[in-house]
Image 1 (tube, rainbow, N blue to C red):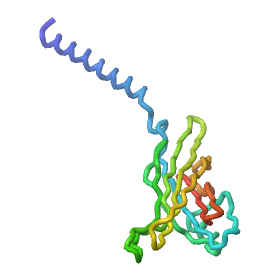
Image 2 (image 1 turned 90 degrees about the vertical axis):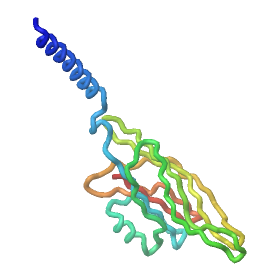
Image 3 (image 1 turned 90 degrees about the horizontal axis):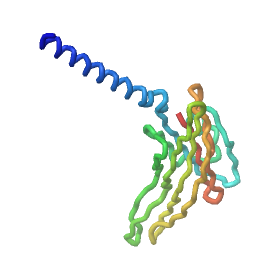
Image 4 (image 1 turned 180 degrees about the horizontal axis):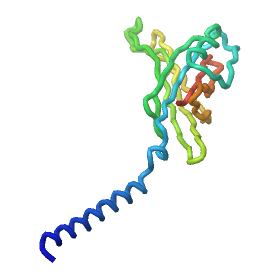
Length: 184
């Protein structure tokens, strides 16, 4: 066998080994379908005008339709669409204002939340949940008064490509706050 044929044979063995390695990696790497679709989470929080008002637990329709359905009894304090979320991400939702008081102290008013997103989906079903902790902030002449509350884990509806499914995942009757979430 001449030198040219020996080199060619060695290269073909190495090329075959390299292709086999890539194929093996491809088999063991999750496919784009298996890795999960990109998910985004939509939030809206309302401040009730009348604390005795009740809102539905599930609402189907657009964000605008949800807001229109409650606007006679509440006003929006925050609406947010996240970038891509993954399992165990922490989503910060905040709407607040900083100001200097008449006593030259820094004060803060608004709501600040840290929500924990969980993706417990498997090959057959989609399972998402959300939980967290929020601070309701109120500014006064002496600074900020803060009331912290926990948001218990809530299972979310399966995402729908046809319409939005808004789930009421927290309501604080004392503060008059209502939170809804929709997952895309």
